[in-house]
Amino acid sequence: MAGGKRGRPKKNIVKVNSPKAPVVTREEEILGTMQDIMKIVKNLEKRVDDVTATVKPSVPIAGSAPASSPSVSGSPSSLFPIPAEFREVVDTVLNKKFDIQIEYLSDSASFLFSILVPKEYSNASPAHWQSMHEDRRTRTILNALGANGVREWATKVYDNFDPETKSRITFDRSQIGIQYQGAVGIPGSSS
Image (spheres, rainbow, N blue to C red):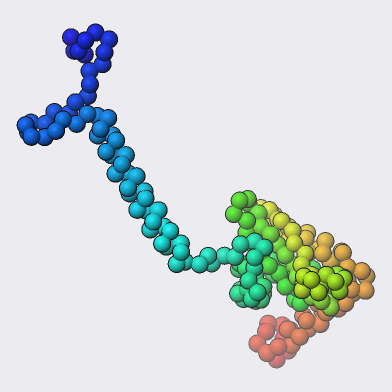
């Protein structure tokens, strides 16, 4: 019979032609391979720990923004580069005095879009300014909406102001545009 005694499987034995070599079963061979893999994994874990201990994260964790954020794309408080189309939408709906900030979310196809309202237009209370040091209007916008989502949010922020503040924002938007058009080397300027 090919399998030894009836009903019992034959043990897997690796036979080596050398009389001095020990006989190794299939189970012992697998156990040895698993121990080798575990040593490799432990070595990799140690190397990863060494690397992560020396590298600081380049993206701040939400809610723990540093006191001085890096300046990106003309906005002093941006955590990520801001698409020019988004900046243009905010400049058109509000004006260039409003800073914007974007933070892409890793767990969804959306981003946090913040409009930082200048103190001169803010309708936040003095207590809010004292504790928060800013008037931030933030909304989660789907990536698929892009500039249309930004336009919708900027319009809602604009609609939140009283009529007097809206007129100042609009007036300042036109004055800022005139200043830029009168600059030397700017298309549409008279120089």
